Length: 437
Ligand code: XLS
Ligand code: CA
Ligand code: CA
Image (cartoon, rainbow, N blue to C red; front, side, top):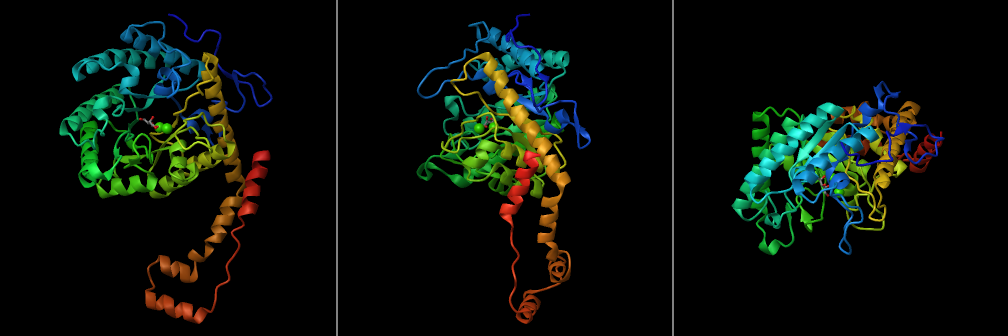
């Protein structure tokens, strides 16, 4: 079989002193941290769309890295792409991948033809899964690229579009189950609106929930036991997206009775687009029981869009892995690199270096987060800060023993309250000192 990444051999862990650009400095898959292998903590996944499909085009220019995999025939190219994907995952030591239906096989002239193509390619993926011991983290349907979805899919004004979307989701669920995936993602690419002047928002929201219920019913009927995920994003491509941020999505899921089957897939770059930190979104998910999976990437502070950069920010990785550890780790989710090398990083080696940078960043994040937990000063501080809720008046409030009158009587007698310091700067310096070792 042809080698698609000649010149790159299996990437090994060489430790922090290594200067080898094609080696891990912090990610040591089998090393045990807090009772679990690093690979199990992270569950790294490759995103088929960025890594295998996107060629680096932007509004101003064409692609800079050809990804036809040696053939101009779309199906042959798709087969070669699959071989290339597994070679890449194998060389990087990545165990999982995520895909949209249209990433793995080209869309045909009809849904029937597209589905037949997916059957063929998914047979090959199944074979390669076994050969290389790789797994699907999650599958999804691309319901945003084709012009038929210009006004949305589940939220389209035209019921035929809704039906088409349902057909695609059915097939994508079939594929996810066939390939052993443990997650299915709803990212509402065009599930939003540009102007209220042409929009029936109430109906669109109800329909989106209808589509999700249909997906859950069908998925469970074919034996899908994993999690359904919604991936929040505030804007882009639509001006306003219904799955704006974690809080919005949690409200939506609860309102429509979808909260038993759905969790969140939180993407770092989407969090910042919504005006939150990545950690904020993760904390909210953890504290409300919706923590599911992560799309690992980062945006650019100076650019207001979804740049999907490989994550190299240590602080973000530390705070992310802190939340993951505190959530008890992943079950059906994992860390999917929904990230692409910059357009000017235009060689095949750059793909490897990008993954190495991202994986090493999260490996460092995990190592430091675990040290922060072992250090204990943050936990102790927070515990003490809220100590008034575990005794006296605080405990009585929590236990529901007091009404407004009783609280007022207490407050009247109490006089004024002395407020403690939040010690933010001190706490930030603790994080720095643990990072510095
Ligand atoms: C786009 C999203 C998308 C989802 C999967 O911004 O991140 O790639 O993860 O459809
Ligand atoms: Ca994503
Ligand atoms: Ca993104």
